[in-house]
Image (cartoon, rainbow, N blue to C red):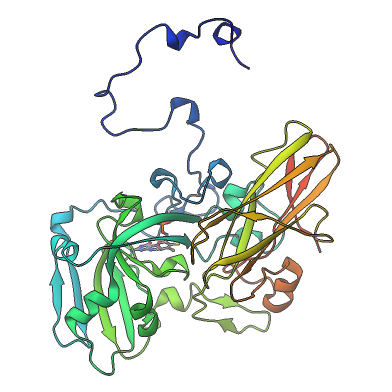
Amino acid sequence: AANAENLPPNLPSWSQHLGFSVDDRPYGRPSQHEGHVVRRSVKWLTATRESSVNFTPLHELDGFVTPNGLCFERHHGGAPDIPSQDHRLMIHGLVNRPLLFTMDDLMRFPPVSRFHFLECAANGGMEWRGSQLNGCQYTHGMVHCVQWTGVSLKTVLDEAGLKSHAKWLLPEGADSAAMTRSIPMEKALDDCLLAYSMNGERLRPEQGYPLRLLVPGWEGNMWVKWLRRIEVGDQPWHHREETSKYTDLLPDGKARRFTWVMEAKSIITNPSPEKPLSVKGVQQLKGLAWSGRGKIKRVDVSFDGGMNWQTARLEEPVLPKCLTRFYVEWNWDGKSVMLQSRAMDETGYVQPTYADLHQVRGENSIYHNNSIQTWLINPNGEAENVRLG
Ligand code: MTE
């Protein structure tokens, strides 16, 4: 509760002495009163803290840009902090000129800046067999969205010169996990970037400093961090991350593979389990929507568990393969409400219900759960993660 001594008509305590100086915080940080706004992990989820994940606090954010210090982290062998001057990018394989780049070399190419979301294929993976985690940070927080700056991968590949039978790339990380994925050449030449900055400053170590690959709209594990090598080949490598991991086991025992695209998805961030309603009357419902296939075209919101829908207001700019913010102004009369949001992208794809997704995919999956989320708002204003159907 507020301290009455600081409220009108009194002069608040902070008006009665000087504040901190321009030299006290050479690198700024959030207000000490916002200390609860942090990435959080789920301790039981992984056996070690290095091969683990933490989650973006989506319910605390406005707009569509994630602040650098709040971008979720996922690494398989811990995050190295590599001296930029000791880092090299090697390009070899089916190229005319194998090349070795310093960071300075890469920064001499024309820079490109673009906003893109990055979503882990496992976002929502814990929810396949029923509602498990009571918070949108945990059910949907393996996504972040920043303005990336770097050089187009096509520019760098052109410099090396691709041989005519060059069809696939194998990017590899310099971390202890040496993460690799096979990337088809069509995508590499389309919109991939080699990024060295996020939101205007150099990458954070946990996001891949000094260099990471961006594969816009595709699953996060392909966005290789601490990128040290790109091998060019004529076929995919079928490595661990695309065989035993990052495949989707179906009910008949077969597995879907190379399921790269992150399909359209949305989440209501406010209210949510972390952000209950505190008063009756006019409320601003807030949420985020995204699609790996392009722009979000429409988001619908339901207050009765999907029987009736109303169209939300999308906030500009609505950019391709980027988070889009949506709002609905509504009136809460203090009764129970079943909140849902449903995204549609510019291809016409509509976010599925869990029942529809389950029918096709069964429940052996971990990855690619883009089903509609339900929050049950109780008469006391608290929101609960529930599963319908
Ligand atoms: N790159 C390397 N070198 N090592 C890794 O462990 N994790 C991948 C990918 N790139 C990983 C990596 C996974 S699984 C995801 S979801 C994204 O990075 C997470 O990116 P972030 O930490 O910026 O959120």
